[in-house]
Length: 295
Image 1: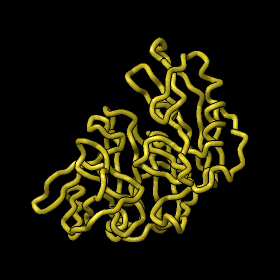
Image 2: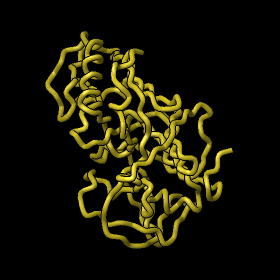
Image 3: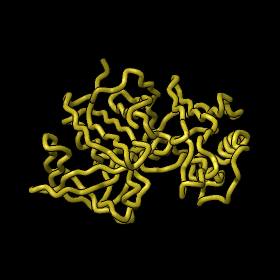
Image 4: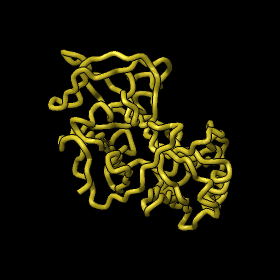
């Protein structure tokens, strides 16, 4: 059995789409202070900066963390109606790091596909699907708190894009970023191959960074080619319509991928993680994906 460190306790918190709260991130409700006051916060596997204070954090009635270190953010963290953000990165001040002694060095989540569905965030080892596939969790000295993975290839309609694996180097998985961002060469190749299967739809102008958009209002059954992200050691994310596209105003559907704007980091966004159980097993340095974790 893998070692997760710490105890075998687990805290599972309902997670929801933040769209009704004017954020594209996913949210949970936690209690802060004694007596506790409930706050709705986003959760994010990236990193943030701010000033620090200590107080009690209540995840569930049976999962209370006294002397928890909170940060007061120096900048906007997004979401007009959310209160703040729970960090899940590998930095010392994150929820994951502070809770690891009690719950072990592992957490998982499932991001629901719509505001009407419920997902979860689980701190500790919970009942994971038996079919979870794992890929090594990588670390880069420049960004030690981020979760890097080895993205090996991308398929569209079962056809592997003709690109060398080095194109995908320095790829992170992040619950707080909405769309997946790729290097210009990789995105251009993906977009061109994807557009070959979208001839039944009418192209419409771009939406922000999304430049592969179509009018789908006259179609009852929306069909798009399957996109698959392939990782080292055989793990993969097979994307259905919800994981491939973003809908706008019930008529515009856009490919939920974009260029990484020369940041030097590729990002697997939360849109591509929808409905998967995503496992961050830090103790054993691996990240897992299990289909059908939530609706």
